[in-house]
Image (spheres, protein in one colour):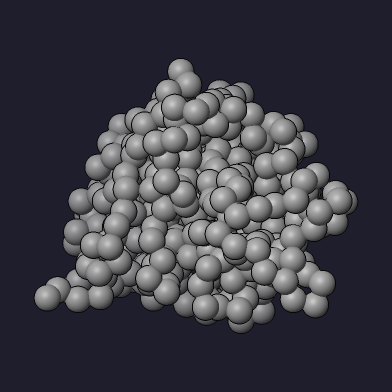
Length: 397
Ligand SMILES: *Cc1c(COP(=O)(O)O)cnc(C)c1O
């Protein structure tokens, strides 16, 4: 737990904290480097390539730093592909989108090196143009192998999923012409999982598509690998990678998002008020789960909090909640060694992923400023937001 917060003693130095207004995110460069070193070691031991999935973390001021360790970026569509190309030009740009648009595809060809299609229709529609422009063309398969339980919205192998081509659809729709366009196979089925789930998935991939893989140049194993989490079995991951390389003669790509920036950011927030209902004390904060940490509600999960426990292990118990009108804008129940009071500063951990690139201004909530905690201990503001950022998304006059 303290490991997660090792960066904040520097932030809490008086000169630094005085200049910062809450709510704000602080991204911890040293943590990011530590993650990148782990990913880079997998690259050097196996010869695989690792891409940053930008949908989890796209604070591009850190891209030059990350470019020293990883192989490029992965995008969910046109804008992320452009960002990857502009901000990490030395890396490869890969894109996967559930469906590409006619009016965007030409521009996409300027940015992406690998283009992965979600259906055989889309491959037939756009594959030849991609090929003519020298792109490496792939298709996402669905190995129909669920390895996660509990949250179906994060399971691309759930029944009825639109993501990836199942083998039965492949057999119905694939033609020799479409097959000839393919350079690689992509699958993405995991979410915050260890490498035993990858191993299980790889067996399913081999069962279903083992006949196709030898004619491919690459296999992209997607994201959801919790590689930088303490206790993750990296040895087994590397076995999966080398197995694929040896068995099918493919290059292997991984595209983690979460693992790149795991535990590499904090959200600083202030207690605005404390209210009570049915013996529950509720601290109302100046940051919102719905706006500033949306995955707390979507996932759902309870983020780590500095000097506190989630649950009721400590003496003073509070429910932490946001200032919006949404009844469910609740971050979670925590306990503390001391009573909370108005004006107290609270610090949430693991706030670099699915936050700065996913937040919103619901209720007219301000977007938190973003700071960078550098390796040398200095702090700089990356960007700040105000009323104009709320207003510009709603109209022009
Ligand atoms: C979400 C996603 C990723 C990254 O997932 P993480 O869980 O953040 O590692 C990678 N590839 C694809 C296609 C994705 O949809």
